[in-house]
Length: 173
Image (tube, rainbow, N blue to C red; front, side):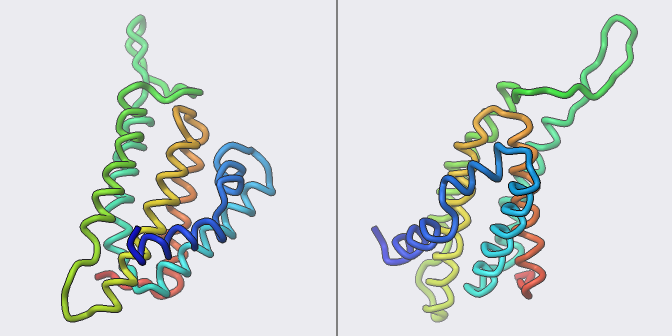
């Protein structure tokens, strides 16, 4: 395991446990909302401190928004031609597939981050930051599974991470 990977793993284990993620994504309570807010702030602040750019986060967030659009497609009632939003408890197979495939895309993004150049330490920090984001989001995707309500909380959680990163001074590029 690389030093950056080990640093990412250690940070995630100490700051964002699976229990915390599960509570954020599966519980409907004020405590879960508060935990979502607090955890997103911790992650956003850490990503900023590691000089992770907003565009690096948005590259992944854009994919999540695309999946969200697939969830929010209205059902068409073929009997009377009307369309209405239906509240679904499970994600459709195509949506679940796209969500699940986010995990290897995150792993790929992690592999692309960093590399050799003159910036050295900054690139190492960005690798650690991408590792944190990759691990947190991959763990979250596994918890969401095919639960539509958990997916919506996942989107809110990711959006909050992005917002806090920007709040703490995250750069655009």
